[in-house]
Image 1 (cartoon, helix red, strand yellow):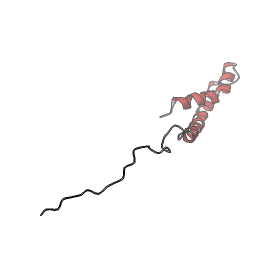
Image 2 (image 1 turned 30 degrees about the vertical axis):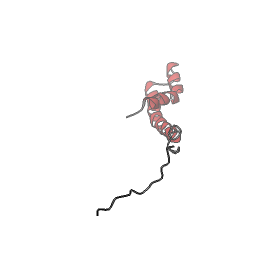
Image 3 (image 1 turned 60 degrees about the horizontal axis):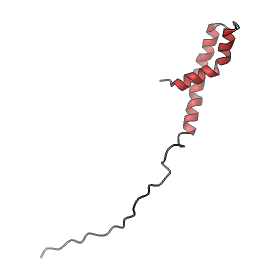
Image 4 (image 1 turned 90 degrees about the vertical axis):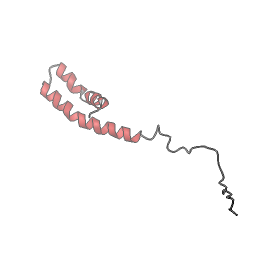
Length: 80
């Protein structure tokens, strides 16, 4: 499934083509081809950004603080 952020980024990448379409300098098929080419490029770039920033919000590096406990053996009464 393509993320909406990827589609929005692809739209931004292909914005000059859309602008040239509005000015009647390009045909619609050329603009759509440029948009279709921009979608996988945007997907790779957004995935790379997500990979780089994935560890910033996690608390995996922090050690859990707790009460230290020293183990003591149980004393068991022997029968007899």
